[in-house]
Image (cartoon, rainbow, N blue to C red; front, side, top):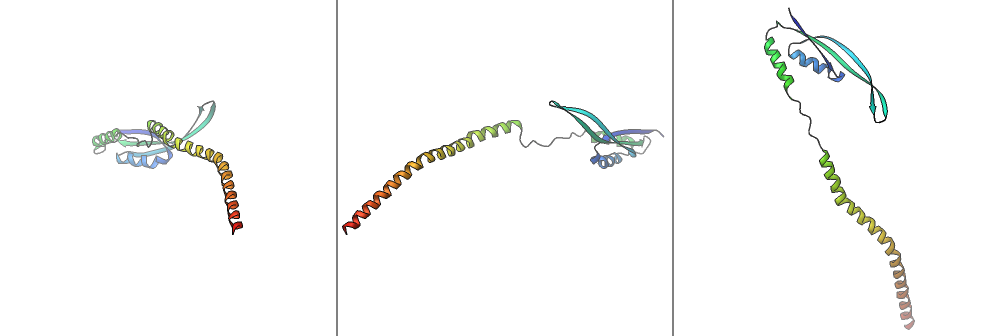
Length: 149
């Protein structure tokens, strides 16, 4: 009765999933242990105390169990499957291109709006003075026309 023993460290959230996977390959769950690690981490000029928790799972299986060789082979195949990361929504190149696009198209629009507001604030008083003079002139002409009636 030769037994094979294996211990793995997993995140607390994936403890049950790890047990299920190992049991699929003939491993029997033997023990669990919560491990807390404390260490210091430097971020810029600051040093932080970091505490991480993980679960240490221990499994065992008989080397004389039926289909042992096939289970070992399937387990190797399972762990050899590459895990591909999800696609990146915006890579650095796309962020740079987007920033250039924003600067090239939105910034001129904003600058034109600012220019129009400034120009309007200069032209409006001039127009208002001319419009007031024109109204006064119209009223004067109307008054002269009524005087002739």
